[in-house]
Length: 114
Image 1 (cartoon, rainbow, N blue to C red):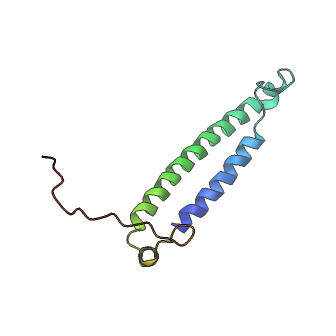
Image 2 (cartoon, one colour):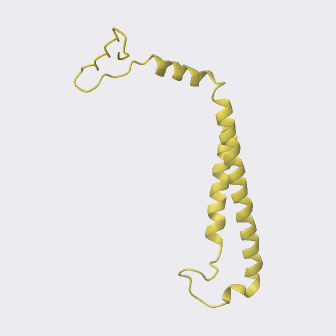
Image 3 (tube, rainbow, N blue to C red):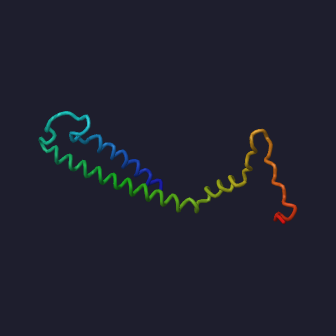
């Protein structure tokens, strides 16, 4: 699982680089004319765009697989069960002031009306 997490981090960094390298396509605050189509920049843009989609798909698949492995593997590890046992044995804290809540009075008779 550690390998998958490291691989996910590497793919996230690569996706960030792919997005930063791309030229803006004329939306938002981008200014300028049609100079982005000169000297094969359009082909490079297509490769970067396809690479961005591939990396995004890999991130989604890796994230879902890491989540699935983590959920199925957490019950089988001994360390997680030791932590849960320790939490179960921990007493609950009393309310502020050190007083405990009064116990409910036991029912002493027939509660139906005649």
